[in-house]
Picture 1 (cartoon, rainbow, N blue to C red):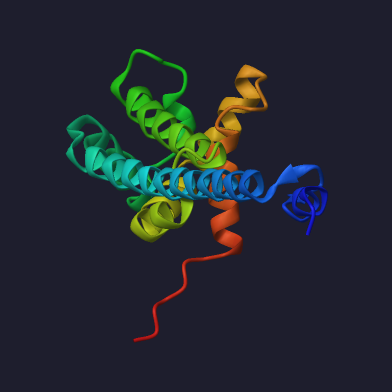
Picture 2: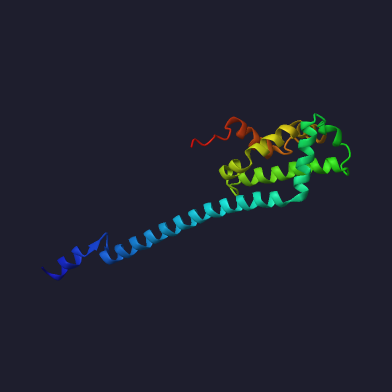
Length: 171
């Protein structure tokens, strides 16, 4: 075999086999790195969701506001719209604290910063109860302020969960 034939057999698309092996290894390394990044992203999102729920459980002001809202609702004294006129009063602060909390969470879920499935498994009943209690208040706030987008993320999340409720595990 002459030197021309040896050079031709050692090349593929104008490059040596060594070049292609090195390129393939580099490509596989890049795919591996992307896979690691994506799996860490999911892990971090799940961890952030769990941390958020833990923080909510330890937030005494939020818990007090939720208790006030639910007590008002369960005792059928929860005409929350009567509390919207005085923005300095405690009832208004309770309502707003709960609504802002859920709007923040719903936005985090929508923007894929929080894991919806984990949050749903941990907080489904709580969120649904709170939306049921406060939905009329949200509609009244929208009408009185003229801002149709107030707490729309919270509403969208609650409605999505109504349509696809949490399923019971089958042991």
